[in-house]
Amino acid sequence: MKRNAFCLASTLVLAVMASWTSASAVEPPKTTAGQRPAGEARDSWIAAQMERIAAAEGFADWLGAHLEIFPLGPGTHGWLVLLSRDNRRVGFLTVYDDGRGGWTIGEYGHGEPPA
Image (cartoon, rainbow, N blue to C red):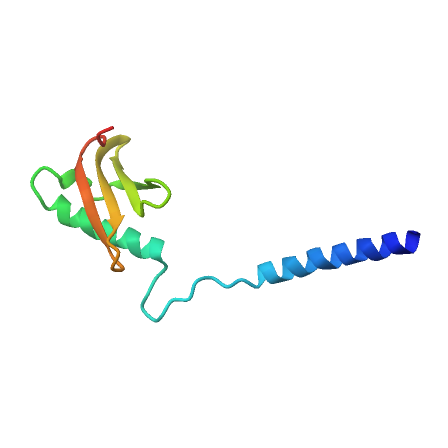
């Protein structure tokens, strides 16, 4: 009886250890030369759009603003971007995956986003 319990316990320990080994062997997503992970590329795209919008009249306070990026929800492939400067909200963007490997702006504006 003790021998069977020991064998069962040993088998369970080995099974758990095997799963740890295979889990740690998972590699990060592969990228080709010049590509960056999607989050980093998206964030760079957002920064470029902010600069473009900041050039328009009334949006100069967007330059150098602090970004907070939040997913809009499961399956939406969209993000809410809040822009702050000197502890006040200066604007917002909604950004969506365009389905072709890029992004598009849904809307943007001054201050807080509409509810």
